[in-house]
Amino acid sequence: MNGSPQPGSVQEGVRPAFLFPVLLLLALATLGAMGLIAWKGPRPADVVSGAGFETAPPSPPPAVEPVVLQALAPETARDLNAKVPFINGPVPAAKPFILTGSPMDRARATDCLASALYYEAAAEAESGQRAVAQVVLNRVRHPAFPSTVCGVVYQGATRATGCQFSFSCDGSMARLPSPALWDRLRRLATEALSGAVYAPVGLATHYHTDWVLPYWSAKLDKIRAERTHLFFRWDGWWGTPPAFRQAYHGGEPLIGRLARLSPAHAQALAGEVALDAGGSLPLAEGGMEAGPMAAAPGTPAFASPAGNFLIYTVSPRADPAVLAERAKAACGAQPYCKVMMWTDPVATPTALPVSEAALQSMAFSYLKNEKGAFEKALWNCAVFPRADASQCMKARVPVAAAIARPGRVGTSQSGGLLGKDDKAELIPVEREESAEAQPASVKPVAPEAPANMIRRRPGG
Image (cartoon, rainbow, N blue to C red; front, top):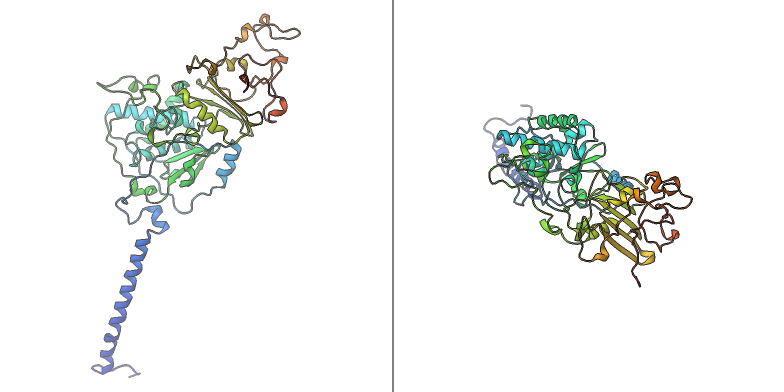
């Protein structure tokens, strides 16, 4: 009734026969679509969470690139960094890291992590320090990095350049924290090694300050800013939770340069050699290509607004042969550029003018002026010996022994202090260069130039 088929009629048997082929076709189409999706790879949401991927892809972990910076003025780098958008979508937090190992492992790991917090983020708020600690522990869990805390923090510390955390190879460790600050940073490190998680940076494995621009930053996902620090994770599967599966087995290495801060690093076990022992390695070590791009130095202690006057701190163990290439890389395409380097971070100037006392401890100087077809590099041969004496800076007369000048204050009778008229920009530049040949960002030198100025050789 009502037009419905009666039991046992022909219409009742027609529906199943008609539907089976249709359902079969729909099932095959669904399976084909699912296969196509799987072939093309996971959806963006799956990439973020790692859902559906319990095993690593066949490709090896991404290579850990050395920290090589583009030769940019700080303000230019800030502008470019600000134009890079943060990723959309979720930022999964890391799992708690609870260090298991011997008492020596815990003591060494705590002090290595605290040293990273001091030298990398002492000026940051506590949130920024916790963010740096989280990056270190994320690296310990990732198969692209060493599986110990000290191994991660001091990776590449024997290189003259290219270490993963710049403080471990640029001479910064000559500076020591106050006892109170060191105790506070050790407390933060202990909390991180006991399971505290700083979730806002998620699975970040990289970071840098916003006034520099590493070459690797364009390849990573930008996920967080903490004051001046920007945090990144690898894109694709290697930045998802399943990738962070590396186990911690203990065996924290000895770090010789931490001996002044850490009793655990002041005692070597039987037959143990410090991870940071030995001299600097060749610039091309670890897959780095030779040349200006690979040789670019780290963050300058001072950079002029135009980016053509730069001051750096370098390791006293650096290979002197590569300092000139590092300076050239820092200058880039600037037609006029001056680079000065010190090995003592305390003595390294951070502003202009450069004092006479600071010039006495300068370790390297480089000057380029395309207008005058001039280029010269000089070494402080007491720090970096050179076989060619013409490459050595001339010895400077100590300030206290300065010769009196008629009508000037600041003579030897005044204790060697520079008088008002002597407070010029004490920058060792080429005497023959005119003031017009120098950019506005670098003031001309006073007529009484320092004794170790860079000079052209005859016919230069």
